[in-house]
Length: 214
Image (cartoon, rainbow, N blue to C red; front, side, top):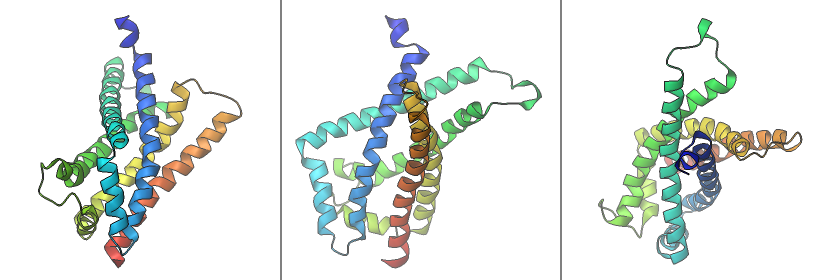
């Protein structure tokens, strides 16, 4: 039983499910962030308060944090296994396209994880009372951060890397779950491109608009 649970295939499956859960969460997060573009802070603060207080959302929050943790741990675990399986580079420097994407994923994932730690420090830890700030006015917190050029540069860089991460993750997750089909696989690949461009671009646009015009 332990071999089945901790096999490479089962870990890829769990990581794929956790990754898809996170992929579904990002559009919700983006929709709430759009309220930051309003001149009135009330709608965003109400949405943030609802997300922080509604019991069902709290359950969702635990699942989200668990998904992030599982995705990160399994991703690192699988990457280390891949490195150990190929201690010496390919002869003649030839590598497959799939291998190149996989090797790139660990670095884009590390960049996104770094941003998540920063994001949690600036928002989630305020809600927990670990960092000074007003948990009832995250609108002002976000706007003040997006007025800092260095923060915006880091934000934009992380979302560019997130786009690369999402593109490969979107397609590979469905492949890991065995959803391969001569008709649907090309559709999934197109959706992966659309999602990987639209979501990071949307978040980036919000940051740029607040930085430059608000």
